[in-house]
Image (tube, rainbow, N blue to C red):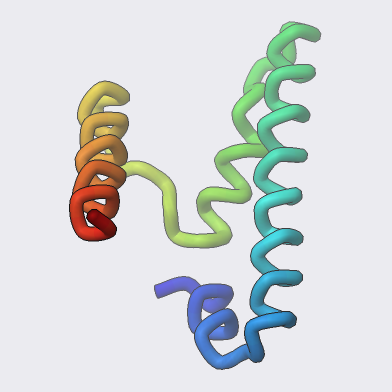
Length: 85
C-alpha cells in the first residue's frame, strides 16, 4: 500500500476528493510530458509516467506483457460492473 493510499483512507471526503484530483492531475501531466518528450525524440520519454507510477508502487512487474496488464484492468472493470448490477 502506498503512503498516498494510507493518507487517503483517513481523510474527510472533501479532502480525499481534493487529494485524488491532485494525484489524477499529476498523472495526466506526466502522460502529457511523456508524449511531448517522445515527439521531441528524447531518449527516455516515459521517465515522467514511470516516476508517477513508482511514487504509488504501481510500476508493472519486470517482463509484464502490455496485453496482460490491459486484460487485468478490463477484468477488474467487468467485475466492478457486475457487482454494481
